[in-house]
Image (tube, rainbow, N blue to C red):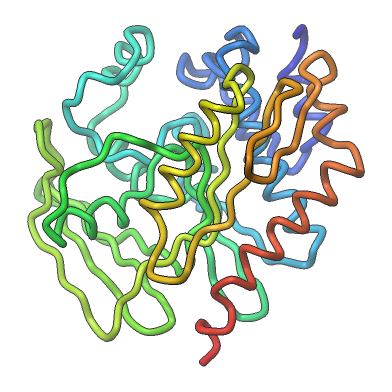
Length: 289
């Protein structure tokens, strides 16, 4: 789609500096064919934040991204060798310092506050869940939800002496991690400390696709639902699909020929708002005890 970036700026003027980032990693989103799904995923994230604001939710983007808008395009994935990175993207990532890649991995894409309860949004990776999963003795998993809404708040602490610290705070406790900033074939956890009754709740998962069949989508979303559930608390699932097929889970169909117009339709906005409401309410009762 021609002039996609300009149309996106017109649609989301509050995010001009992020959309207008001109680095190779940013250009991958805007210059790639729509069939890659990069643009749909990025626009879905902006729409999520925009709809939340219109619901009266406080939405903030970390100053780290405004100071370094190119890093907003990086995944929330702790860097380590796993061979899953595409060739072109891998070469671009090599041009970004490892320290900045670690900071971007830990830093949420947005923070939200709804009726006193805090949430954050991450894209293609939920670092604190992965680390808690490993600490509990489980095997590392490779799946990365396109977008996730997580209960609590993240504070990125000191970055010094080749390490980075961060803290995830929930209503009942907190987890603090210290990671080594290094190339490794494992997640480089140096220290992990839990205080209070720390509980990890993924409020919502969004899968974006332009080519998945309903069968493929059902299988993948079910896997997410099982992996990111916490006892009886299961994340709300949403499938944003650039084709006509629907999954067993709530599906929003987008017309790729009219990508931005379709995303900004009143029907789609209303459905995203209802989805967000369910995400917030699924943990709100516990968060205010």
